[in-house]
Length: 585
Image 1 (cartoon, rainbow, N blue to C red):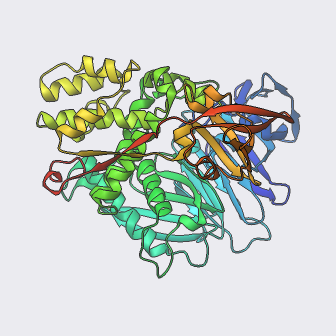
Image 2 (image 1 turned 180 degrees about the horizontal axis):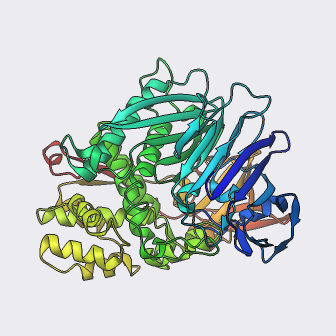
């Protein structure tokens, strides 16, 4: 048995309880253990210890005294020379990629939710034993950990080099669908839980294989040895198909994904739906992280501190540049065409242009503020913040187009950073140094303007310089008014009011329920019920002024609404004669 050994049992499916038995072969005289407060890749203190209960300790047959030190740490007084056995339960009912879940249909957990950290022994080998689930003979187990002794269904003993590896390999349990493929000689497995009977697994495998091969070759070249240069020797995709959901979390040789069931490919349907394109983009994004954030990583992540926030101003690079390449590599893999890629790029541009917070917060500040702003969004978020994902992807676009005008590309910079920093942490200066080494000139001006200021990005000029045509088209009515809303129960629920918008000038506020509209001059005024936002332009007709009737805290208010000139969004077009020099080439 390893010095650190965890036995995990799905103890009570209906109560959603995992039972964990942790054996420490050589504990310290005063042994401290703790549960992480966050999971790498998701920048929010989530307080996983709130779900830990019934913690007890023993040595041989003697009960050991456990003293709680703080919200997530405990101390055990130990006798020398005797193994320490800790036993506890974890409540698991968060159906996301970040924590843990257990019911009669499926189990899932990240080590950060279940596995106490043994202080002073984090660098020792760790073992995880997955016990078969009682009463569930058809259940299987899947994880990216190295198996030592397992049965055909995946239950048994696994090995991790240290605590970091242990908690970076989530576990899927249940009666999932499973398929496999090889990408550049590297074995990959895909498991899917909760899919509909019409799910086309073979198409998902084939498309994912194209993504993986495109990304391995992106980083390591087109040669036959590309796969041998990759940082992973095997890889596992875990997808939880639900009625409504979306997200992913990267790990060193696996990823946990969640998507709507209807976004999966269907048997007999060769079309690529918008939802499936989004899912492929998510797969591409998380797989790209295998290099960009799991290997290339900011200096703040050189060694994770699981007890507190780990701040970095570089999420615009690690998340933003990954967001740039996720759709771009779908195009290079042949899974979308130029028109679809241009549409996705235009959507990203629109998202930033419709965010007033881009005038308030730089993308570097957004990286630092992720812990308190990005993961804690409220009605003022679009007015005070900008997404380091989306704006970061546009910074990457600006760099790529500028580099291409000088005979280079961002691809070269990424591969140069891989060679420069894969063995150690990466800093912003490394990006600047790699840009200078490639082009022979300084890039301080561009990085200062695009990353460390709230200046508008020079998207139009850079796109047009590459021959890309920009068509201004009418935005939807919500963009026109500056509202973010939800049509529900026959009325319009206001979720956010954008700074400087017509909606703000009228006096709308988040939480309002838009009930009706009064249109026309006094004496000839029409009074109309508003059931959904798309009703409003029909009710207005040619009028630009009206009264909006809203309910706020059970009070009825009349708000004077002046409708502005039509808002516009960009539609990008890639002429055929420019496709060879376009980044998707």
